[in-house]
Length: 426
Image 1 (spheres, rainbow, N blue to C red):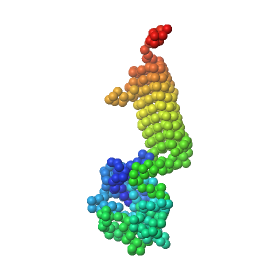
Image 2 (cartoon, helix red, strand yellow):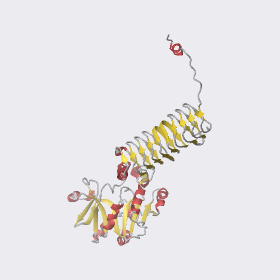
Image 3 (cartoon, rainbow, N blue to C red):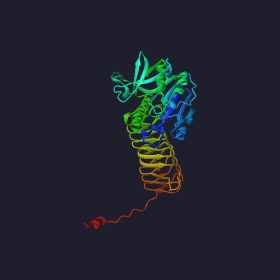
Image 4 (cartoon, one colour):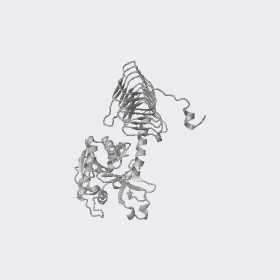
């Protein structure tokens, strides 16, 4: 049986944020979620070690049914200290860092396949400056040397420690109790196990890994780089499943959105927590927590949370919020909030559902085959029944019965010759 332990206790001070580092998001999902989800593809025996803002992180990850521990930073600080009070239950135990959201299950699996007492990750860097070097002889790790302690030959080594380790259970049981904090930082270091194991002539093998997959997040800059990689992975996945994307580098799709059937997403669009079914999202539109089905939206439209758009065409500069539209046309320049609009209805330019009175939100219900003229204000709560026409420029503040015409206009007043009088011209 395999066990995965995720170290997520640190403060992440270089993030310069009150948010715990592991709760910072890539494509709208906290980085710790990615790591747990990939780990769950390998084993259900997962331990997560927390400390900083323990309750906040615990609340986020409880849904995964993992074992959650709080590190005693006062008595046992450091990566080795994190394991001092953890039960080791797997035959092989992988130690992951909670700030590596780009790691995949395929990469994790490789560690468990290596026949060694310890398997550790290394990266082959063109420029390893600033990193500790990993000295390998006859395919076995001999030591990890910090750059400041490295000699001239060691400085030429391109291999650096990527910070992920897989131990046989008995190795951790033997060496974790032997760790001490006799160092400048007064911390217990997991890397000290490597040194002790080398002295005991144990079999330590290095697994060369891809820098992208094992990228750690230590700053907002790192976060932005990792998010770009994750967003590209998400888009690649959906394009392989048949989604058409126009200039995909300009499109943002989060980790929660889903697509069904052949969809098309044009440049500059932002899609978050949406479900899009056989629909087209035109350029520079924003879809948030909404459902689109057999519909066309945009360009430059905004579909806000709790909206469901079915068999409809929503045009440029139309905003829809918490509304259900079924076979509706809203070509341009409208706000439809807290509305239910049925089939065959046309919404003219400049139409607004006035859904908020400063204290509460109210519903606008529009039936079938309704023609709403341009620049109409529908003051909720209001019900427009089927087969109604509303004249352009009307303000509607009462229910309208089926088959009616509603018109609300002030009489047009014309004063002849006023232009010449006003400007003093003949």
